[in-house]
Length: 292
Image (tube, rainbow, N blue to C red; front, side, top):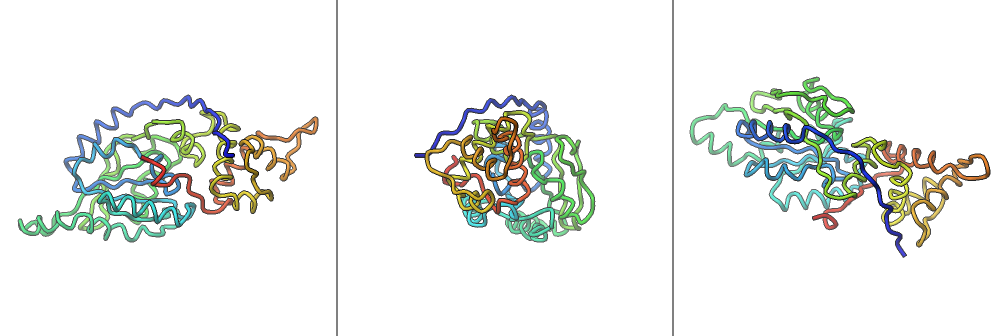
C-alpha cells in the first residue's frame, strides 16, 4: 500500500511579486510574443499561473529547459500537452546549448500570422519582439545568453540578478526583452513548493530537508524504483514510509552515527544533491495528466 507524503511547513513568502507583475503588464504591449522558460522536470511547478492572464492573447512559446535531466518520455507528453493549448514548444539544455539554435525558427513559427500581417502593411523589416519570462533559477539568463551568443543577461543562482528592462538584439529580425522584475511561482499547494525545493529552484533551508528527502524517496519508489535500486542498491518495498526508505539508503551507504543509528540527515542531503546532479538518471517529477 502506498504511503502518504509527510506534511511540510513551507515558510517562504517572496516579496515584490506585485511590482514584477505590474512591470510585466506595462511592457507587454511592446512585444509580439511571450516566451516562458520552464524546468522540464517540473513544468507546472516551475511556472507562474498568472502568466496566462498577463500574456493575454499574445502568441506563446514554451521552452522546456534541462531536458538532459528530465525523463524523455515525460517531456514528450508535456510537449504534446502545451501544443494542444496552441503554444509553440522548444526543448533545450541551456548549459550545453542543445536545442537553443531552434529558438529563432520557433519564434517565427509562433508569429507567422503576425509577420504576414506586417508584410501586408509594408512593414517587412520590422523586428519581432519577444518577452522572456521565467521564475528564478530556471535558466532564463543562461538561455538568453546562448540565444544571443554573448553574455547579454546576468546569470546567477540567486534571485534578483535580472534587474530592470533590458532589450537584447539576437539578429536584425529578433529582439528579446529580458523580464523586468522577478516573477515567482505561486504556492497553490505543498506539492509546488516541494517540487521546487527538490530540484533546487528554492533553497531547501526554507523547509525541513529530511522530510523533503523522505517525500522525494516516496516519489522515486512509486515512479522510478529502478533508479533507487541502481543507485542505492535496494528495491523500495511497498508499505514503507519515506523515512524508512531513507534509512535503508543510509544503511546501504554506510552512513553510521554514534549509537549504531544511521545518519538520515546526511542521506537526505546526498539524495537531493545526487538527483540535482543527474546521478539518479533522467527523472521527471510531474506529468500533465496529474496536474490541472
